[in-house]
Image (cartoon, rainbow, N blue to C red; front, side):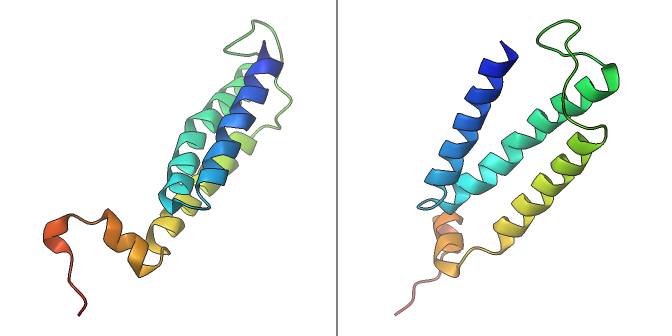
Length: 101
């Protein structure tokens, strides 16, 4: 089961990455959704087991989940502010949009 679960997670996050080519906000959502995934890996590393399969030790090094979750948060924050103006404008409420003539 964990192998199938890992493969499914890889596929889901790959879809977020591919959709993010056209819809930049999808990359932000993908990074934010990856944070709980990292937390599960960190829990597994500390507990010496798995939340999904009893007594199965994770192959992720200790501390990697925390590092990766921090990286994911920083990347999501970066992409939130680094989007081109036309993409930021599309995410703002209509009342705040400024018409360019």
